[in-house]
Image (cartoon, rainbow, N blue to C red; front, side, top):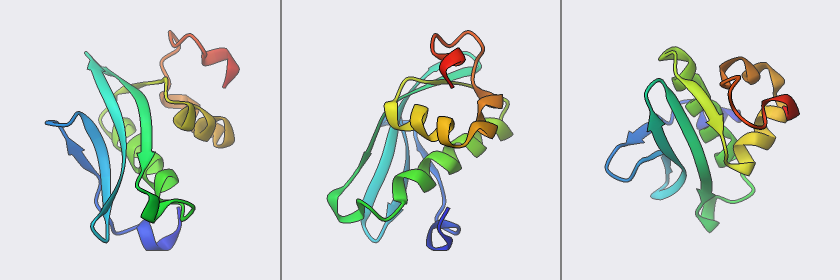
Length: 105
């Protein structure tokens, strides 16, 4: 994660069902669904003003850290999150072994 994102707090916006970072009045977020002790991350989006700066990667890293701290298993349906885990295989440790694409990570 780029140093400029380290101190930006992760927000779990339960009303909108998304994890988000607010950076200079703009957002990057990933939508989720909760299923007991599992969370499905289904879509990640970054406002145009933040594209190409690493904001979405910072969001995913902070979200995965939050899930791990809270012993929540991940279902990475979002292609961006899935690709992030493939690039950073140490995060596979929090992916539910029941996830259909587990063997492809």
